[in-house]
Image 1 (cartoon, rainbow, N blue to C red):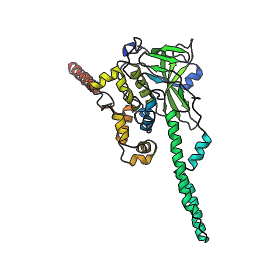
Image 2: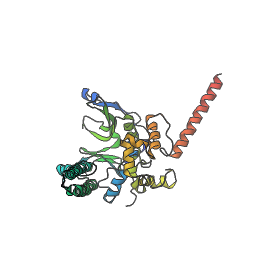
Image 3: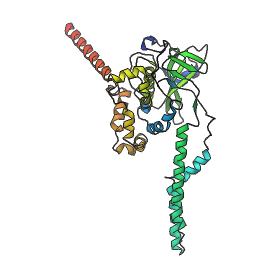
Length: 357
């Protein structure tokens, strides 16, 4: 594949709306929408936590890289939003998966343990049934192998979902929806709040079509869970993805496409990225999936020797605003520029104070 060229309609920070117009909401929408985010042209260079640290990314990449960009939700060309059930692929058999999973490890230890208890009971009874000792581990081993193959098959083909052509297109600055094609700036970013049964809230970033007298619809962008700051970071990521003057966001999902985007190619060749070309791939390859999974989903995993511990801790502090973003999470030249601006502002303030005295 060759680098594509941008269209005149592509989005740049110069096209950023100067003022975010308040959206017209009904009573129900006031309950559902937590806040309206503002458009801005000064980026924070932070991505959502789940896009920075994804436990199964490397496995999905290795399995699906031959099918780019058909089954990959994000590429250098489009941020895909619309997915439909892929009926061309055979549907998954839930009962079959559950049956195979019941006889696979680790649940298989339940059946093996029961069989071995029966074997010990038969020895005590004077008539040993050696079948209870040998056959269960063999059968469970076969079912475990089948379970792995079924999961890899599901992962490979995304059998339940297929992209329907809707999404945010970087090269054209257009948004394709079920109602037609619109400009990126025709939408307002909002954070939708979903109340859970336990009293907590889940926050979702959505792009709401501004001209409600024509069409009333919203496009889901990112599910942030209970972390509203993650939704803010997702908005920053989407802005930079659509801005052709900015390189692609530095997340694992987009690393395989960096060499296909002209702005990103120029950016990386000048050394501004501050990371090796295969940074995310090598980081994941050096640590197996279980290491990442244990850390992200198991408190015991935080006690293990894991490179994500300090990385994610610092990154979450940046998202919460408790720590200034520093390289490599923001570009080196942006960090130096911000530092100079801070010192200049501080010097001007001190000079003003001295003049006042």
